[in-house]
Length: 129
Image 1: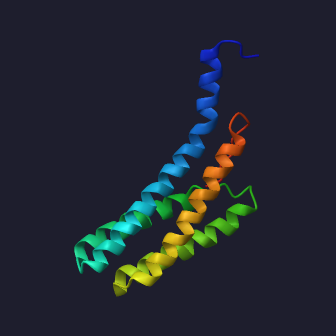
Image 2: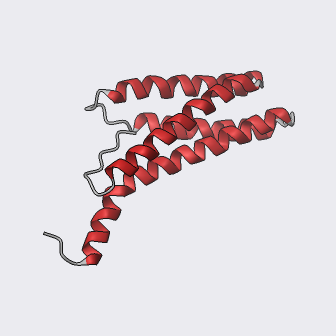
């Protein structure tokens, strides 16, 4: 049994770290997609390409880090693959619509994981990506 406040803090920090990292990854991908959209609107090909590639890198990392022992991981993998496809389409064709659709999915996923993290604070924290 953990009795010292420091040990309780350490255990809590370790349990919430995966959720916080996941949320940070979503925050980064959202920021980069918004930057890519901004690049398209400014007709700055280099900027849009740079930001979309960074967003794709994060989405790819989210996908490869999935734990497939959970059924939801297969659905998430398909969704991440589709989001990546949308980002590629937006980047190649320099159109905003696919990026905005991808952004919507990322924002929804980020909010879902944020809510899940709040519910599991203090409990065992199993994040599947």
